Amino acid sequence: MKLSLFGKIQSQWDLIVHNLDVKRVCDVLMTKFTLLPYELQRINSEVTHNDRARQLLEILKVKDDQQFENFLSALDITGHKYIADNIRKAKVPREYVETAYSEARASTSSSSNSTRRPDNGTINTISSLRPFQKGWRICVRVTNKNKVSKYKKYGGWNQRFNVSFADDSGSIDAVAFGEAVNKFYELLEEQRVYYISGATIKKAKSKFSQGNAYDMVLENDTNIELCYDEDNLDLPTEISYNFVEIDKLEPGKLCDVVGVVKDFQAKTIGKWNIIEVHIVDRSKKMVPLTLNMKDVENLDLTGNPVIAVKGAWLKNSQGHIYLKKMPSTKIKTNPDSRETDLLLRWFTREGRWIEFEKI
Image (cartoon, rainbow, N blue to C red; front, side):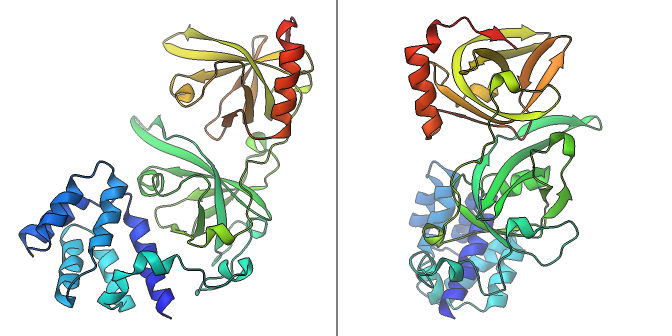
């Protein structure tokens, strides 16, 4: 029972880490309640937001119950009343907060099945999810997370990001829009494991689907909690691909491609600056992949790396055939796989001297 109360505090904390105004909370604690001024000032000097938020919880190894109440009052004052109310409803004694980090991570069982069944019910699998289904809860690993993208909508600007989840039954692509981006983008980290419930399940658009019957939409009221026993769960850690050789690609479809970066070059198309990446494989064909400047910020394309692309759109524009990155497209260089080794060996021995034909 004690562990479940730790979990309530810890899960609530991780849900607000990404949007908690730590500085305001600390200022209220110092000015209104004169709580631990030295430690709180030190927190405000931390560089990253997550470090500040986590250290705030760490120093709440409070000396008396009144200081804990002051902390809850500071949450009320700074717009986090719903979190404070949830903590109050849980009736969590002050001393439980003192060891939240060390004990909330303790495994409740050596069995991975039991760790995937928390106090509030059975865990569903991704493959069992259907539209309009109620009361489901899944335990999944984040296998990929794309950057936030901005787009125009009704004369203004909106935002979105795509993320992929996997469990031992399959995978599902998810998207968040608007305020849900602010709520979940920093919370979700690649390779971490989460409990998710309350998202919307929709039938995937066949034109943009790669075999998944359904997609997920993360709403403002979706509940996402970090799983603290993730090391004991046997969940997929890598993206699942269905690679097609370049000479067999069909325009007008989403596809997965793996090949070697033959070369790349910057281009200007209208007002847009892009990078065109030329991908080749053992079919002796080449296909261009167009990326914007933001897409390549975290990609090292030098030295002829292997590049794996999942879910790119093969477009035919007046005879110019190329791979177009979609919001849900996933791109990795030199993925840890046998295919990477084979392609690098082939390119070193033979591929670099081939005159490749564009598809």
